[in-house]
Figure 1 (tube, rainbow, N blue to C red):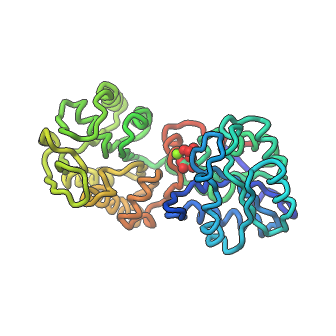
Figure 2: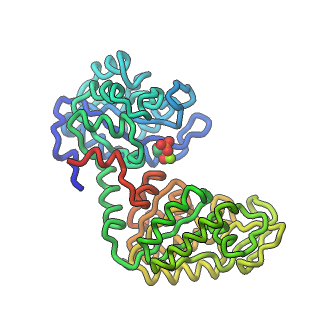
Figure 3: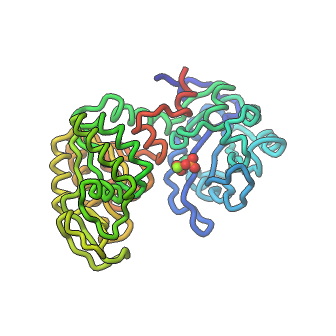
Length: 396
Ligand code: 3PG
Ligand code: MG
């Protein structure tokens, strides 16, 4: 793998088309987490320092090729301006006359944000005409959107073949960190896979059991595995029709010498709400009218022992319903253990996925991890060992 970086390119007086991922959470017209916006600052600043004009290309939500006013990128402008400490111009369209005029009005040092690339159907189709229209706006392409690199879209893939291209600073950092953790990791390796999206992650699990030494399964997905082992889970979230697939994964893990860690004790409640009355029981003792909402303390001890024996940790997905206390306990305790080992130089810890990052922030340990990815789906596909089209397109 080799790709150019900002250091290899000439930006003087040139328009740089910079693909960023500022697909941030918004509530009531405000950005509620500006992390992804803050992470693009080094790329913008470095291009400006080299005399370039920065045109930001980005998507927002899933408008499916239509102009959907609620999915306008305009909502990100205040957060962008705050992060960059400068005025950011905005164009109502990412291609055509509107975009061209806005670009023509730029001076070196200016930043222009173009409207949602997904307002055009050609974006997700990776339509060559769309890629050409985007490419026509500038002279250099910089991809800083690792978290959108699993999409082969016009602004993430097609455009890279049409002009001199390089990786932005965030893309560089993500690739370096993930290569170190997954390309050739120090063993033993433990992975934690949790969260509710069971059916989407079963594929990932199937791949991981061949690559890691220990696999901890948590969240709603663990319930499906308990069901597969004939353990009753009451009213818990579980994909009962996936039980056979779960069994196959357990068999595959055994064949590959990967030790699976499932909850041995669980926290159960009759209803799912903050502060709900709960009890901790052995995994087989969830009542017919109860649901599993978190892993129990014995399970956390087991996980901590595994961490202590490993050198590398890859974490995607919380162990319980961490957004709703007290069901955040297992995730928080395991995260603190990982942070402690990382601080002591015993563990390389890499985490990714929106929920995971939120959980680590909540546990107050995100700073202690070796690397936290800004990516969700792209991080998963990387963990699955897939080639990310946005990254492949940058390779020489
Ligand atoms: C994300 O938020 O995961 C990325 O921005 C990609 O968005 P998408 O899943 O809609 O392609
Ligand atoms: Mg996504």
